[in-house]
Length: 360
Image (cartoon, rainbow, N blue to C red; front, side, top):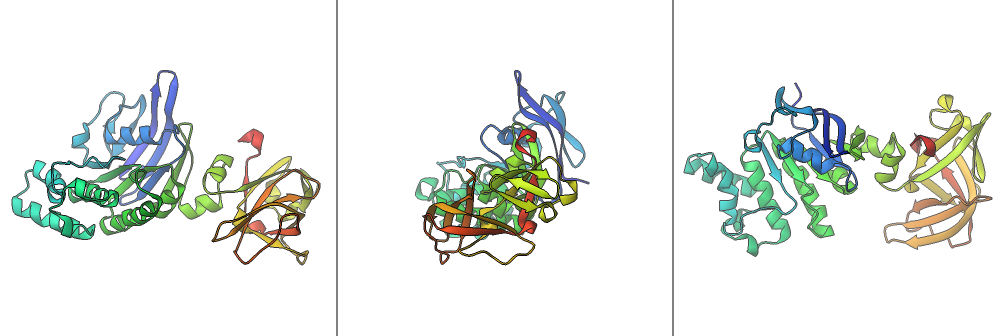
């Protein structure tokens, strides 16, 4: 049986559907991120799961029991869930230990058990030595660890996180997203994580739900989502990409400024009319001289821009006879100058077919 199910979940505010017919099932112990831009419906979905908002239609079920529907709502405190907010929401007048113990004391557990569980979880989040400190004496990352410890110590059936790292600086976000995944691997709590940060979702998640305009565009594991996006929105939102839009003409696909054999395209037998592809910048090889003919796409052009970003060079190439711009990322030692004539080489196995612009 699934742990958590969203079935036809919809939330309308007046005539606007913030969430529109979402269907999603989470397995026991799974970590799923809701990812998308502002206004896509991810936070509204999370708040419906938590029981803060009643759905307009559809249901939320946990282990087969209805938690929410238009007709009824199980109160948040009776759902067996913990939620971590963007602002951490830890009590400023309580020590670290008291904050973590708060939920256990509400459940009227024996003092000895409370102490034992608090000490154990503080060891796990590496905060045992700061047990007597107050929140004002902690860094942002330490406060986030306290919020995580407080949420996990009560052993919830489902853990909900609403953009918990957005208030941290870049280096600390990177550290904490790995910490969140480590804690999940240790406790295997079914988790729903809301974020607009692609890197957070990629690092933490078993599966990622990409939302757009209240609907789900794609649900997949991070590797599949990045390598095989099903829509132009997903391809453009998850990482950086080039969209190559052409038209099938007999045995060729004609793009602005170049052609490639149709046989060398993904899903070649299904192609007709307009044909569009997503190609990641790091999937393109850059050469100063023509590469050997083979089973790869070859495009000749001119470098019109370049930028050195430390870990890689980013080049912008204009194919001959075209206004198309193709971005290419190379290793730091692959150095070319603006106005250099170059060849691009693309492996069809690293190209994803996406809907044409008028079908997106």
